[in-house]
Amino acid sequence: MLLRDFNDFQPLQILSESKGKNKTMKVRGVFSEAEKKNGNGRVYPQALLEREVQKLQPLLADRRLCGELDHPNDEVVHLANVSHIISGLKMEESALIGEAEFLDTPSGRILQELCKAGVRIGISSRA
Image 1 (cartoon, rainbow, N blue to C red):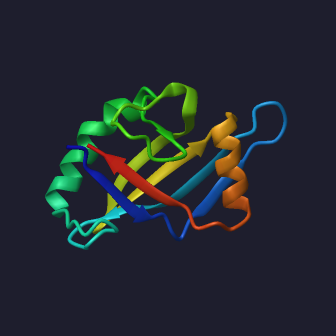
Image 2 (cartoon, rainbow, N blue to C red):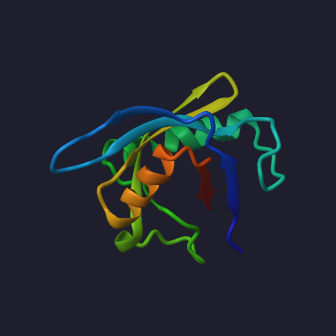
């Protein structure tokens, strides 16, 4: 069984936008909140989120946490569809704050344009 969690990624803060040859956008927002029901009706204890953030630090350092624009049907991230890289995760009280870099890929450009247009973007995790 594939677990999917959805959280409203709002308010989304745009940290930077690159111009020129390699156009990327960096953003920050709330990825999840401990002890609060998420979009799928799940509640995660703070200790669990803190543990998982620590476990992901090596992948963050190696820039290996890639994501896709849409929900794939399986837990595998298909590199041809990658739209963003998660570049930072930290707990601030009960909020899991994440930073992401929207890439200059076909899916990443769509994500950037949606963000610029004010579309409410969500974040989801799979495990």
